[in-house]
Each structure stands twice: as C-alpha cells, then as structure tokens.
Image (tube, rainbow, N blue to C red; front, side, top):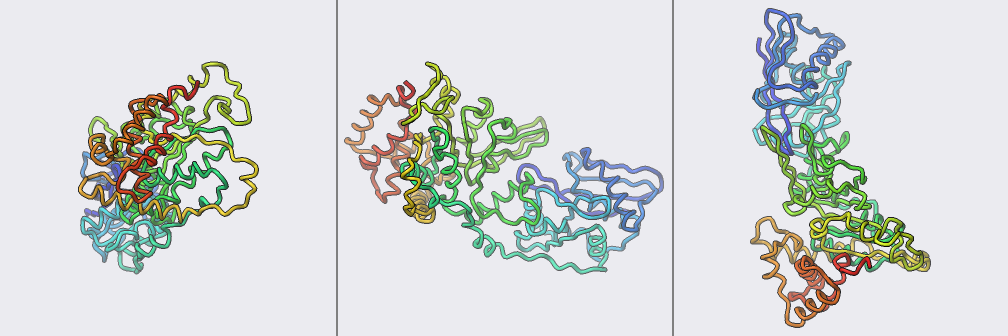
Length: 513
C-alpha cells in the first residue's frame, strides 16, 4: 500500500516542498531513495525504535521511501516524523481520517517517540501557506515560530503517538493561534541597554547618531577601556524600529541557521552580532558544503560589530567587501547557488597600535618606530573605503564618570534618527533598492549632495591641508547630507561639511606619524 505526505527542504532562506512516499510490499530490507544525506538515511533506526517504544511494529517487509523530487539533495533529521506516519499508514496500523495531502509534516524523532525541535520552520510555514496547504504538523517547541504565519493551522505535537492519533482522528489538537502584529508591537523596543547609561563621550554619541541616521559604517579607534564596545552595543537602540516585513525576513534567517531557540517567535528588535576575531571566512560570510548563513546575514537589518578589527584574518575581512556593496552574499556550488541577504551596518573598533596607547593623553606608547603604521596597514584600503565614519575615541575622565548627570536616552536620539530617515525615504522613493544616504551610488551623490562655492572651497582646503585621500570625497558628501537631514536642512551647509570632514581620521596621511 502506498502512503504519501509532504515535507520541505530549505535552500538559502526559502523552502521547497518535498513529497514523502512510502510503500510496504512483499520482500525484505529498507530502501531510501531521492538523494538523502547520512542524517536522513539514519532515520530508519530512529523510526524503528520509536515505533516499537510506542507499541507499534516496524514491518518486516520491503519498505521503500522516496523523497521527491529526486534530484534535490535532502539533509537533516526533520523527515523522521513524516516517514514514520507514512510507514504506519502503509502497513495499515493507522487509518487516516484526515487527509495527509493537506498537511506539511516535519519533525525529528528521539528513540522514545518524542519529537525534537528542527531548523528552518518559518520559511517552511511560509511556503506551506503559499502552496495552499491546510496545516503544518511539527514539534510543539517550534509551534510558536510557525504560528507567526497566518491562515495556516499550526499543529504542535509532543510525540509520534500524538501525531498518529491526530491523523487517525482519535485526537483533536487545537491549532496554535498567534496575533503577529500584537506580538511584534509588544516586543519592538525590547532592548536591555540604553545610551542613558553612558557618561561622557558626547562626540562619539553624535557620530553614532549620524551613522544610524544615514546607515553609515563606522570604525572607532581608541585605547583599551575607552568605551568602544559599550557604545557599539547601544547602536541598535537608536536605529529605527524594524518593520513587520523586516522582522519576518530577519527571523527567517535565524530560523534557517537554528539560532532562534525553542518556543521562540518573532525577532522584533534589530539584531546585534559580535563574532570573535578567530572566526573563519565561511562562518563570517556563510558557506559550507551545504551553505548556511554567516554572521553578516545573521546581522541583516541590524549591526555587525567587529572588535579589534586588525586581529581578524585578512582573508575573512576581504570577503566582506562585496557584501558591503551589494547587501547580499551569493554562494555558488557546482550544481546550484543560494543567496542570503546581508544588509547590515558595520561597526568596527581597534586600538591605534599594538600596545594600545598611541595618541593617549596620559599613557605613553611603547611601540617600536614603524609599528603603528604596520598595525594600521592590516586593514586594506578597499575595506576602509567602505567605512564612512572614522572616529577617535578618548578615555572618559574620572570627573565625567562620577558626574551623575542625566545622559540623553536612546528614545530621544532615535526620534531624531527616524525624522532623518523619513526625509531620506521621501528622497529615494523613486529609486529601487536605495533607502538611506549610505546606499547612494557615486553618480547619485553629485545630484543629491550639491554644495555651494564656499563648501567647495572648504572641501578643497581640507583635501590639501589634511592630506585626505581622493576616496574620502564621496564619503564626506554622503555624511554631510546625513548631518543636514538631522538638522532638517534642505541644503548642505558649510557647518555640515566641516563636521563631516572631521570623521575621516584614517585618511589623513600623517595620522600615524
């Protein structure tokens, strides 16, 4: 007898429906076809142990499991549950009262018949609704994540027994219902840190506000303990809140990577990722034999913080150059390619030299001559070219730390950032794929960032006297446009240009002596 149901395979951040067919006939042995990997093949042992533990039997006949389409590779252990249910139906141990064709079924079995959580639930649920399936049967730990998708019956089950009784009509399980919009609104500003906790560093806060308002990348240069990491952690709190569409997109990526955790639902706050400097190229940008999203994709719609930037492998940093421009990463293999979104703000920090005290107001640098330049040279020019703001961070004095003055909260800064972003949204409404000043291509900068004669004279003087490189020109204009947006100005004024020029520290030819 033939039994059939449906599962799904995830490629990139999208799912593909997989048909699971099982037939039990005269003969011997268990056969699985349809390009399964080792984890899928091992389901035979998990299914047999689960069935025996729950009082069912594994047929001692010829069992053929087909995973179609046969030319797509299937990986992981999430096919255990649909295979087990099809075996029970095909061997006539259960008589389905509910049509298996109406459901997408996924779940990993433990040996006692309990279900373990799986990865990639949200993209599978989205695809199931798109294809018109009635429901999605899955482990109960994953049900809140799938319930984000409306117009789909999400049936969370704890054991194979529960799933079998539901399919055979012996047990009714109420679908889990989630009001996605209410859930999103209740969590959208749920940050644990705030800029009001930071004493002093007003100039760095201002740079962070400009970066958030224009979507600019930032590098902070300063001695150890100056507050670089503390400030970077608080940047997501002043970014505009995620839209519901952005939240779903972000949650999909974390779901595919298995980073959501059990009983997790919607990611409603901007992600913040801070990988260690020993990270590999594939872990940073994504990849592997079966490609998974990397840190730059997990930071999509949020912030990627690279602490101690010169300590990262040069190869790992260089592979970020294209994603920083394209805001996506494409991973190609011989037979197929996947694409992960990677629209993030890069915040980097570094010491000015190996000992950390070059240009320190109180402590003396002990680095040998030429070592400072060698240390800075670890960061390539093309990567530095993609970072708009270079900020020098100085230590906070004792008086500032103990002043107990009320610092401006993130909410107040965020309000100004949102106003600036609104003006950019209106400016770029006819431009596809451009949402902030940082995304402007060079040809657009000339049209949008026009400056008067006085501004041109100031910029020329700065380029000559400060030894700024030619690549700084567009960056200064973009940043000055953002500063003007924060000030509510239609024109880029000379004071806006002057402030933007000071954020190009590493472009100065004599910065490191």
